[in-house]
Image (cartoon, rainbow, N blue to C red):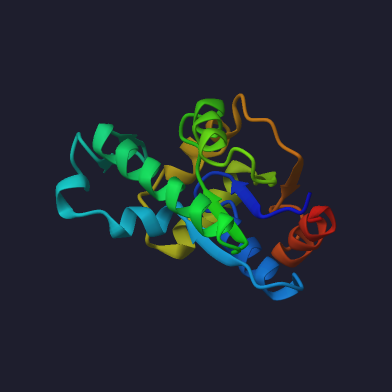
Length: 177
């Protein structure tokens, strides 16, 4: 089978989006890039900074409620429908619940060929990127660096702290069938 979805999982500021942009540039076919940040930005005010939706704490912690989980399920169903209609999609995500998050995603992407990619980056490097970006809650990168990978099974792992995004993308592109 041919890979139709590339899932990039890593903590905040780990380099997922940069890698996704590089993949779009080097893969021979067109690929859409959809990230969890797109989902969060699309949420109505009633689901941001509330117990029902997604809330960001002062130390970088992120919590999600039932409203967010319902919207995420609809979003994943939509991604799967786009892929079944012929699109190829790079999903840029943060598995806050590690393997449990991956299991939820696997249910939505059943019967679709997915390449699961772990994007790792040392805490200090991710924290430096977080500061440089200026659009994240301080501490988010450090708090997510390891927890997002717990219990997750990957086809490939890359380290964006040790190599540039384009080299990570080249490693991934080799695995796309």
